[in-house]
Length: 209
Image (cartoon, rainbow, N blue to C red; front, side, top):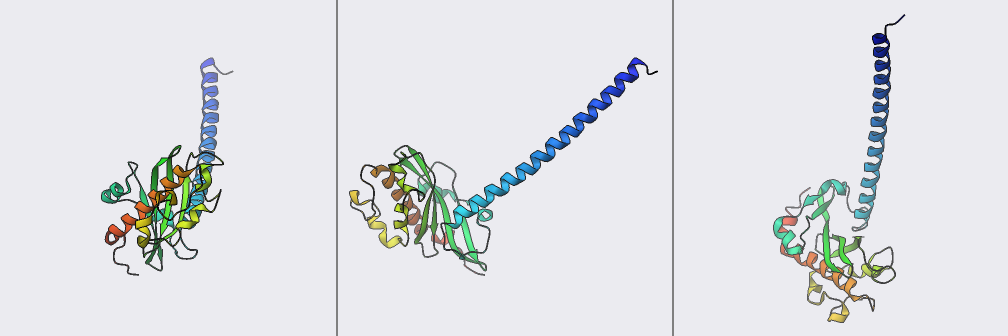
């Protein structure tokens, strides 16, 4: 017959075993889930970045190329948020750059952008990453809602003197009643193009394979 203290010890060991097993199972589940979530996030980010540059124009993993913007460029972008850029390469040569930027003056707040530039500084594509513009009105800046953002494609330094919406005397279209949204995005893209040309030597070092 077991003494009370022996029975208590046995019960404690059993409980400890159950607790250890449960902890290991929960830890394993969390790790597997965490890896799956991280992989899904990486895939989504890669897909979005890929939309800003020509298909098959790079062979590196864009998210892995992320670098913080140098302070001078960050200041020129006019954003108080920490921003970064991504370098696309094909067989070792730079084939494009993707910049994070923020339009601070959207109708309903900040509009986060990804702006893909080719090595000559022209825009390939612009994607709105996050915004709070009015559904059915200002949200036309999002490529998922309209083709509006496609008008930036092919524009570069030569267009900077008229880099404004038509209402302000520029060349870019907008939707009547939602000018503020278009004006904010247009200005942010223009700042990105102008800054690239100003700091091209820093952003595009010797382009060797």
